[in-house]
Amino acid sequence: MIKSLKQLATEVGFEYIGEDVSIETVSINSNAIKANSLFVAIVAIRDGHEFISSAISNGAKALLVSKKQNDISIPQIVCSNTIKGLRALAKEYRKSLKMPIISLTGSCGKTSVKEMMVTLLGNRKVHFTQGNLNNYLGVPMTILETPQDAEFTVIETGTSVGGEILAAAEIIQPDIAMITNVGASHLENLKTLDGVMIEKGKLLRALSKDGTCIVNLDDERIPSYANNLDCKKITCSMSNANADIFIKKYTINNDSYDIQISIFGKVYSYKIPAIGKHNLFNSIMAIASILATGLDPEEFLKNTANIQNYKGRFSSQKIANNLTLVDDTYNASATAVKAAIEDLAEFDGKKILVISSMRELGDEAENYHTQMGQWIAKANLDRVFLFGNNEDLDFTLLALKNDDRVKLYDSKDTLGTELLSFIELFKNQPTKIIVKGARFYEMEDFVKVVCHSVRLDHGI
Figure 1: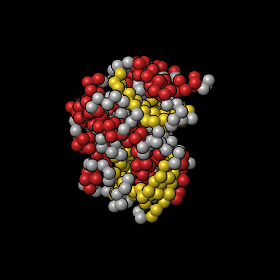
Figure 2 (figure 1 turned 30 degrees about the horizontal axis):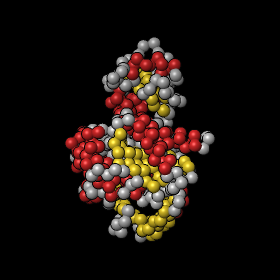
Figure 3 (figure 1 turned 135 degrees about the horizontal axis):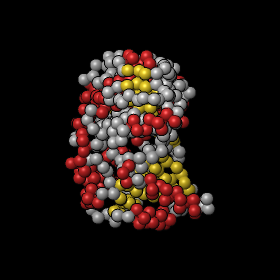
Figure 4 (figure 1 turned 120 degrees about the vertical axis):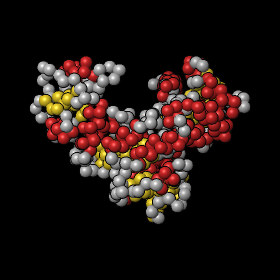
């Protein structure tokens, strides 16, 4: 909560007009004004100043503008550019926050790890990134909304072009930071995996000497990058016994993983729901971050049983006696696609994959779609339904060497019909379906098709 908006604006050097107010929330959408909200009139494709009257009528308590407003009833902060102004206010407000601030980025898994951190912290007061507010506007909004009495803050930051992570890191100034992994995402702009590492590494470079970097030892690039940082470090691995934190052993039951973890030489046990093998490592990263705040493992490991997956991010549900459906449709980086295929390969029963082509791979599209075919071939799946960019998926089919278990579809309707027919053939056998795809292709349509069919079959 910003107790004095006037004081904050004055400290930044902006003109403040009107009575002083307290602010709890920030909005850039005049139709989504929350309690005690600062409305920021962003000038982009549309000019936010055109929606000021709507924002006021919807309850905005103050404005951030670049065009001074006349005859309005609420206070206003006037600056030359509202995007820069938003960032400047957040950067100044950050100086007043005393709680540990954890920040994370990565090619995939960052939202899952963030949600795990929040779950591990249990009943403590935690402020954290909501939804997809992890970009150049969302990060400063999240900082400005941080309550002064929060015990912990967890901020996710993403990127699609060079410079976004640096811009976020300058505001966040994290006490604890991590990169979940470096994979083939946003290569259209970042070009190479080394380019991804350089971009995401800007978050780690924002750490002070007293800050802590959580290091994924299993990543090809992160460890060598982290070696050059002048800060504390906690290393993590799935199996490398040289890591500060690593998994000694795990077993999978029907609905959970039972895990033994070594933390600085001491062995602890915990459970997480069976929400994908890749989430074993995500849980390690989350645990390491909470450890870095100074909490004892005994205080929070019991909360791992409450971990669940975010909608569209490997969200698993048993929708019939023999049918498990995994909704992993939020997005599809190469790393995440490989993880989904590897998880499906371990299932003891019929294995069905519904997957789209990947996007934003630039010149590497042929390479990674070829690799996707190799991953599918190795997994020995019972049926694979492909949808998306035919040019890219032709490379996948070529790698599969005319495997008749794999088919490319031009029509969602046709794919959906044949998917349901295949499910019907094996309805008396344990079956797992993973639906995975790039956001552009809205692969959640197939999740809905399957769920609707099962409801009809059961008269629901």
